[in-house]
Structures are given as C-alpha cells and as structure tokens.
Amino acid sequence: MKQRLITTIAILIIFIPLLLVDSLFPLFQILMLVLTIIGTWEMLKMYDKEKTIPLTMKIITIICALVMYLAVLVELDPRSIPNQTLMLFNIKLKFLPTTILILLILFTSTVFCHDFDASDIGKSITTITYIGIGFGAITFLKYLGTRYIVYLFLITIFTDTFAYFTGMLIGKHKMAPTISPKKTWEGAIGGTVVATILATCFGLFYGNMFGDFFGNTTTTILDKIIDVERIGYSWVVVIIFFMTLFASIFSQIGDLVASRMKRTYGIKDFGNCFPGHGGVLDRLDSAIMTSVFLLCVFQILAYLIPVSA
Image (cartoon, rainbow, N blue to C red; front, side, top):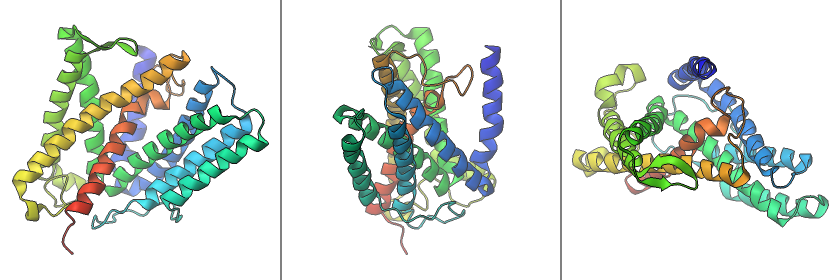
C-alpha cells in the first residue's frame, strides 16, 4: 500500500503539469511516445507466454506502432478548432497508406523471419492498432485543448472509482466472472451513472466555472467543434449527455478488454513500470478505449455540423 501511494503521488506530480499546461505539449508528446514504446513492449511480452516473438519482429512492431501513432495525429482534422500549440512532429503520414504499408511489412516478415508465422501477424496487428491508435487518440485530445483531456480522465476516473464503491456496497450480480470476478452489474451501472452526471456537468459548464483557467471563452466542450447556434443549446445538452454516457461504458469495456487479454495469457499485470500499479496498459486501458471513442465522435460531429466559416 505504501509503495502504491508513493507511485500515485509521483504519477500525479509528473502528469498533472503535462496535462494542464499547454506550453508543455511537446513534452506531453514525448511522454506519449515513450508510453507507446513501453505499452507495445508490454503486449509483446504478454504474447511471449504462448510463443516467443523474435526480437527483430518486436522491434519492427514497436516502430510500426510509433508510425501508426504519428499517422493518427496528422490524419485527423481539427477543422476550426484553434491551433494553440505546435505539433512536435509534422510528418505527413496518411492513415490508409500507412496502414497498408504496415500490413505489407508484417506479411513480408513471415517469409524472411522463420519464427514469425501467420498467427503472429494477428498479434502484431492487434498491438500496433491498439497501442498506436489509442495513444494517438489521447495525444490528439490534448492537442485539441486541455479541456478535452480533462474530460477524458474525469470520465475514466469517476467511472472506475464509483463502480468500485457501488459494487462494494450493493454489488451482487457478477458482470464478467470469467474475466474480472469482482466486477458487478450494480457497480458498472453506479459508476456510469455518477460519471455521466459529473462529466456531463463539466462538459456543459466548464467554460463558466473554469474558463479563465483553461484560457478560452467557450462555454461547452462542443464549442469550436460544432456550430452550436445552428442546432441550439438543447441539442448540445442531449449530445454531451449521451456522448458521456457511452464514453463511460467504453471506459469499462476498455478495462474488461485488458483484463481478458491478461486472463488469456495468464498474467496478473502487463508490466511493473509503475510499482504497485502494474504497467502502462494497466493504468491506461480505460483511457485508450475511451479516447478513441471520443475522438471518433468529435470527428463525426465536426463533419455533420461544421462550424460556420
């Protein structure tokens, strides 16, 4: 418990400034690149429990995950969202050609690397997409603005915290006993309800409460992404509510997906880089899934209800 507490404090000291201070965005990107490398290595080591993946292919998979990470950042279009910070990397990697190139590299590797077969291709593709797209999505949310990354972690933290306490108090019906025996439907519903209410309030009123802190004059989290005046405030409330609701659900799905992978390969944690907490993926499994969902929603909304020029 003491080790876990010390690690938590250290994580907060490092992460909070990087999350909240816009001028530190380049450092945030460097951290995400490091976490991408560590997260990819954690998944590849997990696969080693079944069959050892050659070191050469591990290195290639890590490089491909980094390339996918960069492709996500440069492919997505913030549209009319103000560019308040400069991207650390301005490499023009289009997402579809990058994906096809990665697939060609992996399939070719089965010919020249005798210990890397068809079943290993699936493991590498899963790792590259899960890690590369996931950490790319987290980075892009921060790129869009501090409020978006805060919104992300409010959802994941509130969902996880209140699911735990609700499940401990009234949880009776197991949700996924073969994957995560301690999780209950009561806990899942309680976590989602509380997280949806609190994070929706942040999404609707953060501008009035924290506008000066976040350095902007917008009111809701959808301002600058969609044309709010065009659809009216009532629809904004509905969209943010349901977006938050499903984001909370995906937060729990992300946790269960990671638990399923660990159960499949018989490991307790993905790694031990955070003493008392496990590895990178143990800490960010919910954020990975939720960030990808949120980014998809933002992109769809920006396309359907674009801000007027």
